[in-house]
Amino acid sequence: MRFFPLPTTRGGLLILLTAAAMAVAFMNSGLITALTAALLAAVVLAAFIMACFSISGLELVRTFLHDGVCGNPLYLEITVKNKLPFYRQSCTFHENYPFVISGRNAFVIPALAPHEKRVLPCCIQAEKRGEYFPEKVFVCSGDPWGLFRKKKKFHLPARLDIYPRLLHPENLAVFNKKGNMPDPDGRNLGHAGRGSEFFGVRPFRTGDEMRHIHWKATASKGQLMVKEFEATAVDQIVILLDTEKKNTGFDLCDNNLEFLISCAFSITEYLSKRYCHLRFFAADGPEGLHHLTGDGASLKGKLRRLLTLLRPSTPAFQTVLAAAAENIPQRSIVCLLTMSLEKVPEYIRILEEQDCTCFWIYAPKEAFPPIEQDTPRFLNREKIKKQLENLPEPPVVADFTSGAEILEAGEGYEKL
Image 1: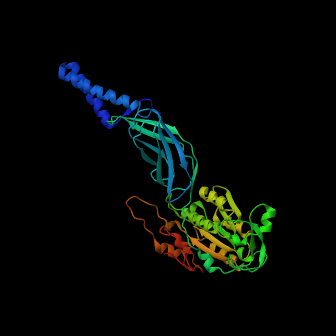
Image 2: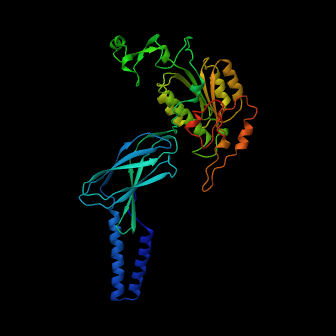
Image 3: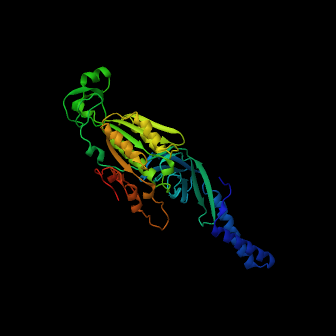
């Protein structure tokens, strides 16, 4: 906090004018020059005193801040209270936000009556995923003439996560290509909600129908239990995410790695509403390798956290493929999200020999050129097509214009 306010451009010019008037009054004494110098000095002094007390008695409290999703509005609330028995003029406050393009946003605090409390709903656009700890809010005010400006810092610590961009697919292409599959015991399974052979009981989940509640098991367990049929144990799904740093695109926010993380985030959010077994593999940072396994609903929180903090990795994607090779069950559905073509076709061939169904999204960094001011993004389609020559099964190719349709694409689809 600065104890003394600083002059604005207008205030600096007036201070120079006042100094000049006072110099003239001393050198050429006279009633008019003395009155002019005294009037200018009085205005400057009054503005300075009012600016000194412009933020006194102001109280800020952070009342609402929640996690956000890239590309979506993020709402926050700051409660402002005037603790003094005097009317207060309007002022502004700003806070540094690393997850927005501009880095900071300013908002207006309207004029307040004596002891008035007001909630300021603020909306910003989140653009960068990650974990953030906003702490400092700066309030700026001054005198009514705008000659001086005073700034005060308020400590309002908080924590929030900005999740990757959500693509909202209505369905996934891989499930259109894949029919019914057996469970690990070899039972032929149908779609969720169909079939009549009793399989067991499990705890109630949001979305289960009340008519499937197993009342005897509910009474003995002390919690809602539902009947589970073979048709509800749907699929074994594996997601392999390429995070290799050398293949990552040039733009900070809109590159191929961020797009593939958005795809993985959208797939896992979609699968959290289905009863399925999910395995996720990805490298992270210099040496980290993540392997998460469980049903789609129970992994939702862990995968959200992981994909929010995931960094470009030093280990090659082949390290992830090798680690996953020993952990992929037969007849699984495998989603490969890659930034390179190296070794991937051979790996898919091995998986298909194990009766696995593969869905491959390829996002080369050439398809995500950097964003430059006043320059349209250019995509070299011919160069990308040459990379796909001689591939037995071309992947689904993503570029900077791709959206949810990339996850809903049909077999052999190529967005070029």
